[in-house]
Image 1 (spheres, one colour):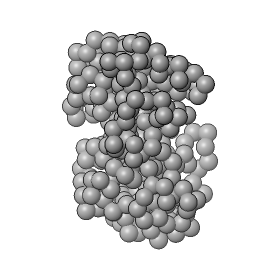
Image 2 (tube, helix red, strand yellow):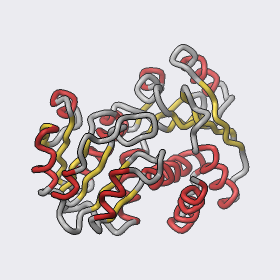
Image 3 (cartoon, rainbow, N blue to C red):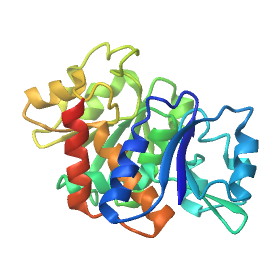
Length: 267
């Protein structure tokens, strides 16, 4: 089996390391590479996959939306997200999936957070925010989306609040999920983390940023005694779901925890 992750840039991706560990521990023969694919070369890459050059690929920025019209089929959940992060090439066809949203839900469940009946506040309005908001809503969460641009927030569905109302909204939600680049290495920090103080005492703070692994948002949550989850948790869980699409093998929770601990120790 020949697999890869595509994007531009893609050299920093941890996907090869994660999937190679899945292969090793699950007894799946094959290879996993990082391939630089640009918007201009994407169509050619998909054509190569249809011809048998690849069995599957993960898709990262800036190709998650651009690959959609090039595929032969997309599962309904993925179509509603409007973005693809996993493609399987079988029988001359390219089929797209999105494991980001389900990965958010499953990684939270593994941390003891049952989404059903909870209230979730999602920060951001990009592809990751939309996938997370839709998956949480399907899992039974009451979802509110907060973004600097109300029009963008509305794309994610559910209730929207303005960025200025973030502290007030935080007080009403047991889960806060950051799907913005704020706090990422090379990106600006939050202008203020006062909203963390407004969260309920048993709230969970999930920061999808994983570089650095210990963000200012996570530190603020931990300082308050809240449960903080970092972006590596999603990275591993969405990869496990993608691996199942590729191979038919579902990595178990213990293996995912082991790989997550390895990645955290290496950072």
